[in-house]
Image (cartoon, rainbow, N blue to C red; front, side, top):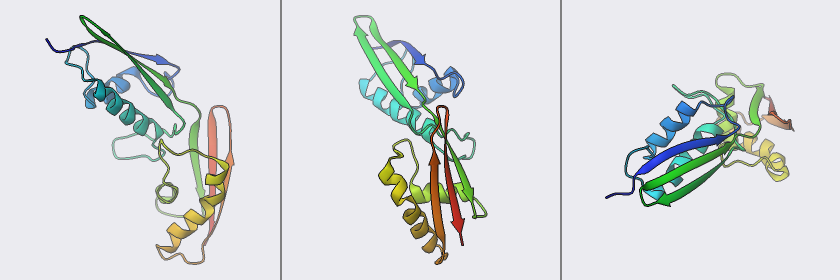
Length: 168
């Protein structure tokens, strides 16, 4: 008899950021479904999928902008004779708000692409120091040769604001 997933539970302080229903949908898309055969490697796929969705600072077609790039997701699996029980603990962390000034037409997308913002991004001092050059290089490849960029990060408990000002 295959190893079935008997229960999938979510814990943590995530109720304001994402619903449990949405988390279950993301887990299901990765192959982690209650009552179905359970492959432990699917838990890693589910973790990656959830962090990608939570950490995406851009709005996409049929997806909300979330921006929790510092989210942490800790899986715990207990295997018993009758099946497996999985618990995913989600700690969203502060939300990243991207404020872009001086660019028209999809400014958040341009800056997000230039800085390669994702769930793997860590806003370290080194990252913030090189951010203006990365945005300038991105814009110069698109014909804005004289663009000058300033990047300021204001850290908060619930929201971190990354302000990017472009002078063209």
